[in-house]
Image 1 (cartoon, rainbow, N blue to C red):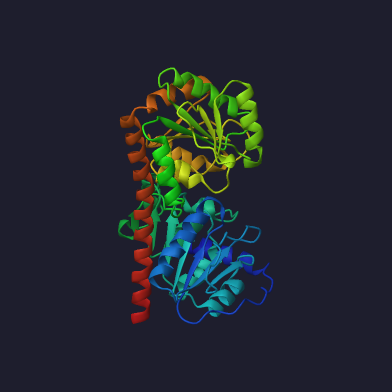
Image 2: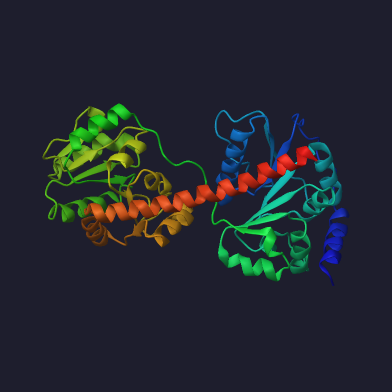
Amino acid sequence: MGPSLSLWLYRLRTRLTETDPPAPPPRPEGPVLWLHCPGGPGAAAMLELVRIARASRPKLGVLLTHPQGAAPLPLPSGASDRITQLALPPDGPASARALLEHWRPELGFFCSSSLPPALIAEAGQRGVPLGLFADTGPEEGLPEFALRGRLSQALLRRFDRVFLGSEQWAAHFRRLGLPPHRMELTGPLSEGPHALPCNEAERETMAAVLAGRPTWLAMQPSPAETPIALAAQAAASRKAHRLLLILAPDDPARGAELAADLRREGWRVALRSENEDPADDTQVYVADLEGERGLWYRLAPVSFLGQSYGSGTPPDPFEPAALGSAILHGPATGAQAERFDQLDRAAAARKVEDARSLGTALIELLSPEQTAAMAHAAWDVISRGAEATDQVVQWMLDTLDAEEAA
């Protein structure tokens, strides 16, 4: 059975169970860029594509679709009213025709983790240029169907360009019949700018206070992780006697209580919310004000990211990476696992299993050469993603230009 027959059988099966879709919202005037993504790990990358494309084409309308049951993408505050989000009805020929007749997109772009076959087939028949970002095999993003392998072959014929998130998928897509000239290896897409803002005057003032002192940051450790950070501070202080730990608790409201507890334990402590600056003999600076992550990542050459020894969600590791801070973390990276893995593989971050290994790693990273090497590696990871995103957006804009000129 050939690929085209498998697609025909899929469309026949879905036609029998289709229902009338709800009335769509109005279509904006002018060209419309259509992106389909199920949310999850790829959501931020799709929004970054939209941001950069619309920076070049402010009047570009955007349709963001996602499967039924998936959460809408988290649009940033102040997002344009020319961006529309829509949950797709169950995939089928009639709903595909209705969507495409109403929205008339100039270009469609899909994630390989979610592929609605009837909609892609209809778009291909109407001559809508289609792109695909592939970080899995295409069959993994298809609905349950007995002939998924054949169906994926049929759908790939509809895509004008496939951008590969990893070289490991190139051979797989060639086996499915995709010509090499329609594939482009980009690597992972960027998920947006990660350089957090800070008050520059405050940064200059604090940098002068800390001048010459070895400093590291424990960002949002849980109450259970705080003793781990303190044990590492005690161990590393034997090698660097003026070492300062900036401790930003997971709940700023407990800063005053935490500072009092540390003083009772014999630590020399200063408290940010009391307008105290670190003195020459301060060992722990409790940074308990909201919205200052960008400040501390800029000032600390080394950052230990909390919530990584148990439950909870660690801070985004791309944030310190973008600001030149070397990253240490525990083994439980949770929802941030993919980003931590990217940085770990590039030697831009280091996993530490317990308090003892955290102290050992911290001592090693007090060397400016070590931290500079990790910061450089981290920047390479982030900039590669930006280059990949630029490649995809350039293809989109070139395709839109060609469609408008036709």
